[in-house]
Length: 201
Image (cartoon, rainbow, N blue to C red):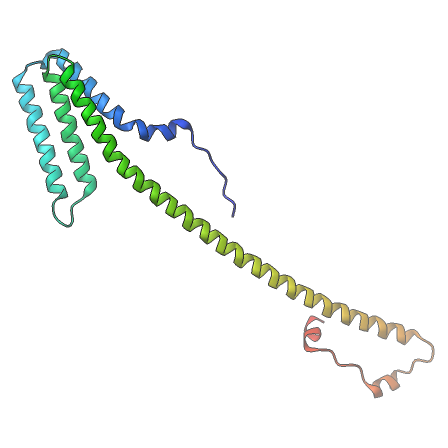
């Protein structure tokens, strides 16, 4: 009933919080590496990134349209579109100012979207923990009531058994007395046991 309490490592707690910054920083670094390897002022490379970013954004728009839109696919497609746009600008631009500006903007947007999901996840976790604790309390109460009931039944059975044992001991002691007449006892009759005592015997 008591579950072991496990403390998560600080890296496991910090990894989700650092994921948006790590993702945007990785895209920026790869874009600048691409820039150093010939993508700077390359119209063909820039056109390719524009087409890919536009295609990802269109896929996200189609995935989120309608009543049966999938928010996970749409979010992934829009994030891919933003990442491709950032990589294209980082690869095409000749300085650091515009790529860094877009990196800061993309990181802020990523944290804004992630904070919404973190709040929802925390709310669901708190609701689940509250529901679990309520069920544990309910089960613990039922177990306590059943334990008290079983203890009462055991005490009743013990008292009945003790009464029968005392009666049998009295009969044995009386039979050992001088002048005991069993025929006179049969004529008088034995005291009748109660139903609960008879069951325990």
